[in-house]
Length: 93
View 1 (cartoon, rainbow, N blue to C red):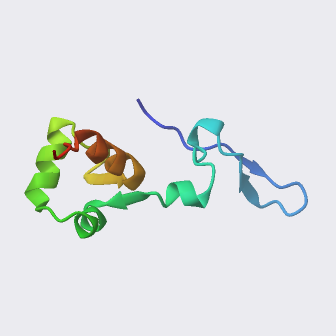
View 2 (view 1 turned 180 degrees about the vertical axis):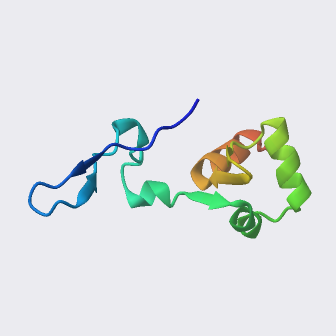
């Protein structure tokens, strides 16, 4: 799939070229900045959890914790990771 350059339109008053509106599919899908900031990287996840980096990697590959991979970068939503770990929690009797 190839992406084409956005259409440009000259401004009638100044003659300068302006970019056309960004298509809806490329607009951010986050409702607020708070939602966007809910994603953390591996370093922050390791700071919050007392486990080794390899353990995080194993949990992610096994599907125990949810993650989002964008290129080479892996992001985590702390609320979803926390909920996933609570589901794995064993009760001590």
